[in-house]
Image (tube, rainbow, N blue to C red):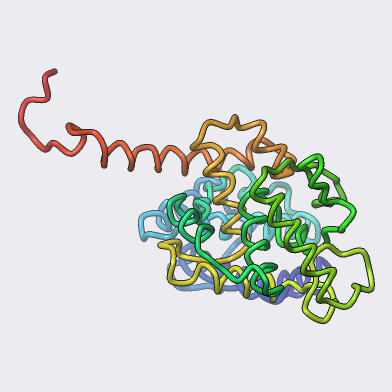
Length: 303
């Protein structure tokens, strides 16, 4: 029965080999639990929701993460759904199981003082590559755009007169992002060097390589990584980390959630809300550092 189910999800549902092998392991583990180590004695049509809850409770007790338990429940649901579709089972006992909420890791961000130190560092303003690389980092951090949006940025979409640029985001949604004087000056400097030292680009791209060809994703990653490496306590140094840093610093400095959602181009406010957890954590950290009574241990706190 298990083998025919695995063939079904691989060949008919076109699930990936990774998912198929994970489901195989999960279901073998459950069958082993349900039959006390005698898989041939399994009667899947007699399984009740309560039997499955026992297994889920055992998984939680043994320390499985919510994410893992969630996948194992999905494997059970899929298996019993198959029994209904192909073998005439009347119900899906796994349908009633609560899916464990997967812990969402908090986004990694660069601390504001670290970003300031990095962006205040001197560089050769006559050198095209150094100027472009600094502008890439500054633009990602001050606009919160994605690396793919930066890569596809058109020259005509960057307006220093108005102090705004137009990006094409996910699902081909266009949005306008305002920017300030510092970025405006850097854009002007970059454009002068680009127009005087680099062959004209084949298309209307804003950012180009020394050859006049457009940027590629790995180059943007390398520029950001090399700029941040060894300069921040952040666990990762990628363009997306600068996007997270933009959102975190905006909220820490008083921007409202809706504005940050619009600037990031998030479809749902819930996606932006993850940054409020970071800003609260940062706030708590600053409070503990700054308040004379925050670190006081024991004794009378004057209740």
